[in-house]
Image 1 (cartoon, rainbow, N blue to C red):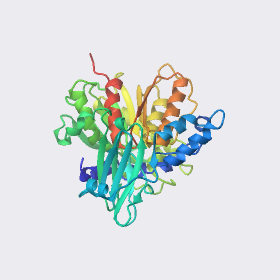
Image 2 (image 1 turned 90 degrees about the vertical axis):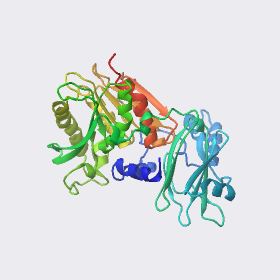
Image 3 (image 1 turned 45 degrees about the vertical axis):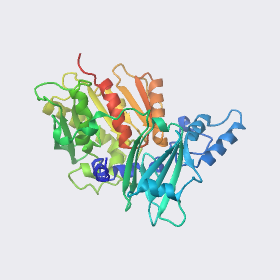
Length: 429
């Protein structure tokens, strides 16, 4: 994917969504017994020397505190100082601003070109204070120890004036989903926009719709409700090849556009401290507008679901209903499935962040099935995903948990949907 395509994707994943996703440090690991740790908090940009020192210190205690977290941290950390060569940097960069080099099966070296301030790196690995400047040049380098590099998928880009990007997929990583070669213009199904007034929120919301090949509203269809739904036209490139190949059932997708960009009216009057998207998607997120989460959930369950059923036959007559999302949208999908077992059969939360579901109530007889996933390089998100999955499993829910050697980026979420949808929406046999 070229740099222009990546720039377009930033817009597709809603205004500011990918950029805010690049700030994983803003997603706090919540204070709860499932998250209690006696060790420092490490990420893939943490110094390997610091991680190794913490591991050695823990070995001197009985029992060693936080041993599992420390073992995981040692498998993915930043080599400091890195071993950098100006000649290698110039050779790999050539005429671009971002490049990589693989040494053995565990060392990833990144090279960047920036004359002034160090650029911010997004998305699978994130940060701006990771770079070491090669003396007397506009060349920068960063080096990482990634023990699972052969299984890793990476989507990396520089933000700002030195924009550049590359994708990496290790030789033992999952096969790239088939949608990458399919243009939206070539879809057999239909994608289009709609607007729907929400009495629950007192505003008009924007929706994005995908109808599979052969759709007629007289028939009954499975449906997937999609948080951050501005990406539906993109996601259709993933789902339709699976449908056409007979790998999954044909589904209607109802995309729920998020934040101010998903609202027709100007809602600057809503007293949220940060942003409307997270206020809508995350419980316990914003004390200044705590009602937004419940109101938005009721908009989906009380207004969107019956409208989709009437308009498109979506979820009608016991057809399978699912809900999915990533990041904060993943948290919304988690709670939509948990709080509404009479409405959703399956929930697919990807990289759910703040709003971890602790201490779930016992599963009802009609409980939704959960397919939860997260990436090893997105530490706060995978910790939240694991804690929620554990809580649900302990409460008797059917939970499938998938770990990817990936970060907080669309390549992980695309892979997750390609792997999960044929299981969550199997074709009729």
